[in-house]
Length: 126
Image 1 (cartoon, rainbow, N blue to C red):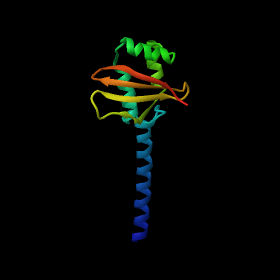
Image 2: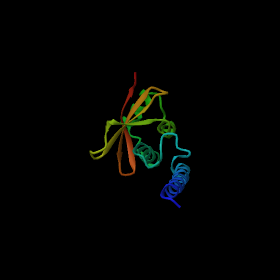
Image 3: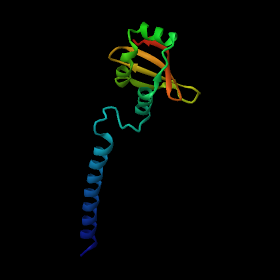
């Protein structure tokens, strides 16, 4: 067997392996994730908010009322929102993230500390 036939055979096997690996990666990571895998930062932030305890102090409730949201609707709103890392402060303690929902044109700044979170501010987006 010449080196050209051997090389072509190895290249074909490499392509099959790469294709099967890509399908497996898609099935394990990307499937059922519209905004990327759960290991990406925005998905982890939304998950920590969903699993956290909402501190319903008067300031947070006032901010939610300004944009027409109720505390019961907050989890669904977070699921449909996008995290804007550029407007967030993840390095400070407690961490502050800005979530925006383009369908409702509302942005919310959330402060996450340990397993609790509260609303710092809300704003209407243009």
